[in-house]
Amino acid sequence: MKKRCGAVLLLALLCPLFHAADLTGTWRMDLARRGGVTLQTYFVLSQHGTRLDGKVVINNCVDLPLRKAHVEGSDGVFSNDWNTDYRLHPEGDHLRVTLTYGGHDSEEATAVRAPEAEAHPPAVIPLPAIDPVPANGLARTPPMGWNSWNHFGDKVDDQTVRETADAMVSSGMAAAGYVFVNIDDCWEGSRDAQGNIVPNTKFPDMKALADYVHQRGLKLGIYSSPGPRTCGGYLGSYGHEEQDAKTYVAWGIDYLKYDWCSAGRVYTDSSLQAGYQKMGRALARSGRPIVFSLCEYGMGDVWKWGPQVGANLWRTTGDIQDNWKSMSEIGFNQGRLAPYAAPGHWNDPDMLEIGNGGMSATEYRTHFSLWCLLAAPLMAGNDLRTMTAETREILVNREVIAIDQDVLGRQGERLASRDGIEIWAKPLHDGSRAIGVFNRNETEKAVQLTWKEIGLATKPTALRDLWQHCDLAPAADAYSAPVPAHGVLLLRVKPQPKG
Ligand code: GLA
Image 1 (tube, helix red, strand yellow):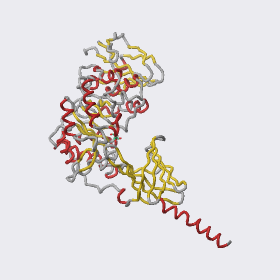
Image 2 (cartoon, rainbow, N blue to C red; image 1 turned 90 degrees about the horizontal axis):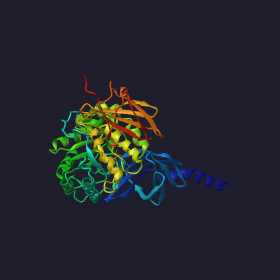
Image 3 (tube, protein in one colour; image 1 turned 30 degrees about the horizontal axis):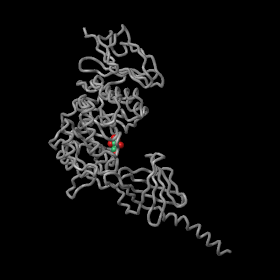
């Protein structure tokens, strides 16, 4: 009896140790993605009984701490801050991994043991000293076009881009000023023996694709990262900046969106400017006019140094989502950045969601009006091939586009905010002002806009409603109108001549 108790005690003591051997270590999980690409995620784990510590290195791009991590039976269970849940089930020498994205979509994969060093970022390549890149003279008005990310994500392929170019012309968008057809993340494949970037199998011939787009009078954009991996986990330009710029020239690329992503694993935040300058310089030396679009979510007050790295635009926020909360929180928070917008250099509150289905037509008109008042880049993010007439009418409203594209190049600012009503104004080159009266409330509001509060001493000589496409008769002191919930009244106001 005594002997058996001892054995039980010994087993009980050893059990945690046996557990510890289960999950502790570095594990590599390969995920197959469209275009013949395989992405690697690493789990770096340390198990102590039922306690589990460590991190997950997602797509080799970002290190995220484990959240709610524990051991259930022999399974490691945890979440990350990107709304993914993991269950790691040991099977022989590997783990069967179940990933659940956003609480519903699931995927199964296998993880195998890997040397710890494999999960480390590559060694830091020293960055050049800060030395301003000359302005490229492009984007005198905010760039207009389309980008694949918001609607297509990793599904973007050659055919979609060609059909989008066709639709941009046939829908009248090209005639209204949209010109860039931009491929976002998920086009990258591998590097050849010389280190040249090669697209994945969804893009069989990038030069031919650029030719196709150019033949329609449009321009082709592409995407990369200063880090080794993009945000989606595909290859970035790290250590290949000049070489990639040359490849873009050989293909006929006209626009580069350059997304920080895994650069954060290699460099510190204080390297932002130097990291972007490296590619800015490579583009400047490439001999081809290429619009340079920074995407680093507004870190390090990018608006203060963007022009010095040769940038034409810079994201000021995290990613937009196709809903009122996300769009309105981003849009109405941009006024403070107005001093940093000017011809050639624009604040970018992210791409348009118009037509993607998550907002009403009224809300999309607010989205478009606000972005135009902000002199924001207008990158449609919907499926141009199948858009409804209502979506098209929003995107090609030339009177509203003229506010965005006004050659004075000033970004609008908030004049007043009261009871959920916001009044924004943007000065225009002919002395007129674009005025947006926004209703952020859940119900319609009757709004009175006085000439005084928009800085006019007397009633304007002309007043035009840019969504109704009609001239209004200005009264002596004010203009009054109902504004629907989440809606906008967008006016062009011509003041009396001075003197
Ligand atoms: C980041 C960017 C997005 C998009 C994705 C692609 O999240 O902010 O606009 O480019 O990466 O992976």
